[in-house]
Length: 264
Image 1 (cartoon, rainbow, N blue to C red):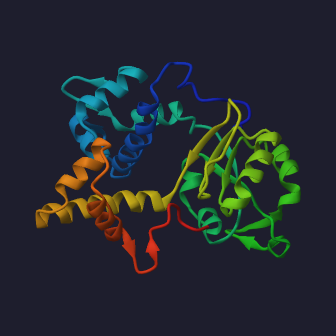
Image 2 (cartoon, helix red, strand yellow):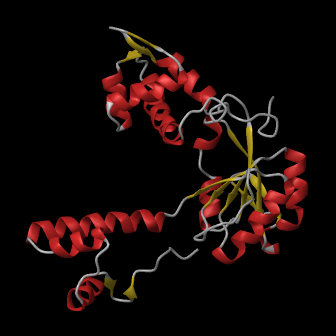
Image 3 (spheres, rainbow, N blue to C red):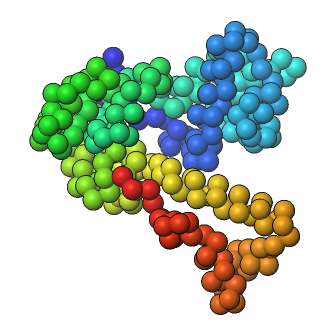
């Protein structure tokens, strides 16, 4: 079976835009749901609606992959599942290590969707000696002292960091030095990596803050307030001191300002 160390997806070499790559998993998720319901074909409009994009954008995205649709019939669901899976590199085995087996790391280890999507959790790693040997999701946790050997033995090219912020960069450096070239970062910090290493950051607090922004804006629209201040902020023009102070007060909870990141 091929591993992640011996193959790189073809998307970059074929010039597929990053925005299109980011939408391919959305199409695949929608197509997988259709496949599970034994739906044989789907139109671009139906698939776009299921994926949450417009049909013109979907057709443009698929033009980078090849012509898989038939006019008047639509797309063959099973064939398109295979083609998108192949483009994403999901038709092979990708061994993954998860570093940091706290609450979040343990939850990731127990997530059942990895295996069905081509990702095999090869090892769970933690710096706490008390965690060593403890089973999580049926896998014995190993100490960080063994990290480099684990990566070498399992041919790992994808690492997941779920450590506290203060430890994330050191863990990242060790992963990269050991040969990991793709990192999924759940730690609330920005990682510095050399060229050739891809990092995807997942920060739930940022997503919540974006939702809070929209909720505040909707509340302002309902009461007829907040419009000018919002416009000034978006235009990059500072609000007058009194209004700026009021806006800052609105963003505070009982414990003061909302933190920029969620604590690990």
